[in-house]
Image 1 (cartoon, helix red, strand yellow):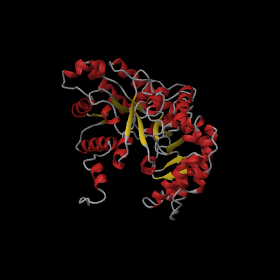
Image 2 (tube, one colour):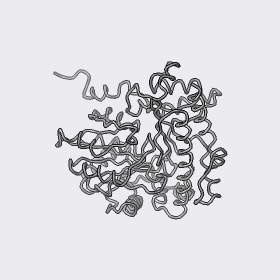
Image 3 (cartoon, rainbow, N blue to C red):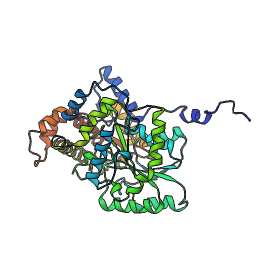
Image 4 (cartoon, rainbow, N blue to C red):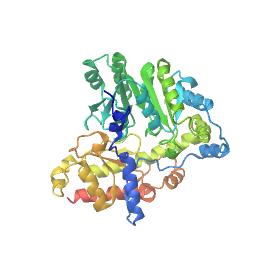
Length: 431
């Protein structure tokens, strides 16, 4: 019988009622309140507060005249720079032919799910867009819940449990670290064990390493080091380079998945055609690195490390359970030890908590339920980025890197983020 709703009925059902990304929605709501004169502490949107490194900005200025369409796969010089960067960092053997450039890693993740025929496996808590993208396309999604006790990380047993019952089913497992939303990361031993099980079951790993360069110790290791034949590395400019609005992401594929790279490139050619030309020329300089960019990263890491650890300490003192941050700029506190006190304010879950915080204290952050956690779990993501990154970076550059930044520095240069967290902690302490 002919489908009276047309050939796209299932797609229509998948997108009908779909809301905005939670991170975008909270930012827009906070901005709306601010337009009406409300002082809001913005701890919701995970946007780097730091300026783009000046050498990269200069390259953008120098190439603003570039107006021609580039290859859909990306500027050859940029793909070479990205391949070389990953080879140098992680001992890989990538070439320019293994790299695909897109207008943000989010777009490339969507194309990956569109072109690959398997299930998506997501550890939770997880970034807010992995699951909605799968739902839009109609892909099955399986979750691997993690625990606070494990640092919100998966281990090799998780892969064995999900793959053992049907080891022939094709799967993509997402591994994001340093993690959004928890700020935790994996040790070499943990990565090696996960890689061993992934290889055993021949699953594809999508290693989302967008925060890799802001590992606080500067010691990020890609799991592709241990499983190069089955790992796709995802990264870009938005987080470590402070260039979210530039919209440039990249995937580095293993040689064995050239068919998938080619399929994604074909779909890209029929959708976005190619990524912004001037941005790609500027990105070459970003991935070439060098002394200036390494110094920039060292100061960014030091600031974020000091602020993240201070914020975690404050939340613990207020009664929350918080994993120690190791990278990125997020915390994922668990407020369950305070559940009886919160219930007196009719707060029974993470959404109640975040709505109360925004409406009553003008503090914007996101409920754990947006990150795949149970609806009744009292977890939330805090992005500690509400400060003037350019000012903080300039001040840090006048302090030797061997020194740890103390409370005086944070009070002077990270005050909005600290004030928001202090207000939340003062309220929690007074419950």
